[in-house]
Image 1 (cartoon, rainbow, N blue to C red):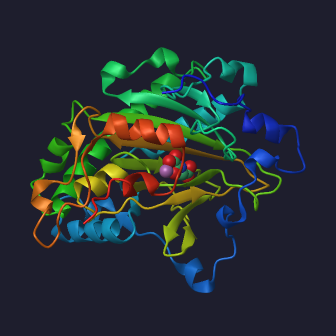
Image 2: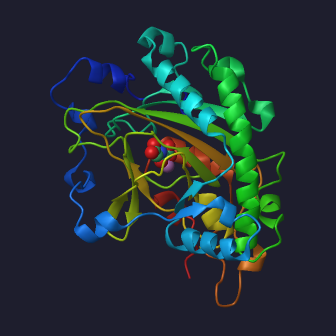
Length: 353
Ligand code: OGA
Ligand code: NI
């Protein structure tokens, strides 16, 4: 894996703050990738499902709701998810303060493509690639053996403590969700967690995304189309500014987030484990000229050193194994080289028949 970036890193936030009137060429996407803002009336009314988790946990009808959301959308919003609302607000606020620090302070945490840990502005190491209009901070959370809080921001003062508190609550939520996903697939409650490598061996990381104001939002993207590589992702969106778009057929649905909701989406590894029953759906982020946007993506991933393939019970004569097994560390390293690339990575594992 490359240990340095192919071109010098430019902080998009600093670029935005200079007040450039146009988007520099390296962020201008080819026409077919540019965002679509004018959705038709019927698209405008479409929404990803919103699930009240009080109606889901331990309820047979809830399992059906989860199953249909994961089969059809790969995404749903959760209310009554159990994560403390004021903690959500505080951790997002602390990250906002971090991004408001002077560039020199943030640069102390500058990341490199071998681990991605730290402050960065680029995904992928392909030279001359068109870049996304965002900066981010990436940190490892689980297993705790690879957690290194000294690589986490030390400012604002409470941020490390808040990340830990938020991380613990979201981790508990993920454990519950994995059990529910398992049952919703018709498996024993602990089957999926075992297939992921077990509670104490799974991985988790947090990427806080910062999308600065953009002078020409119609020409670029905050985050290019991709599916999340791991197990499941819990997204804490900005409380005011929309931006996440989810693939629906040939078009995109802009998510209108419900107050205090968390968004969950299926990643490639659950698509593989479920033998394609659950979909890791493509998504992207659009930016705008008036407001910056902050989001926290908590990635809950399989143990990295075991092969992940379709769960035996989900392979039948009518539904033969769709994917060849791969270890998550290998899978992730391919993604880290290429950067966001739609669904190409998971599709490359499809077995031909
Ligand atoms: C991601 C992601 C969406 C958002 O970080 O993988 O899809 O709204 N983020 O920032
Ligand atoms: Ni994503």
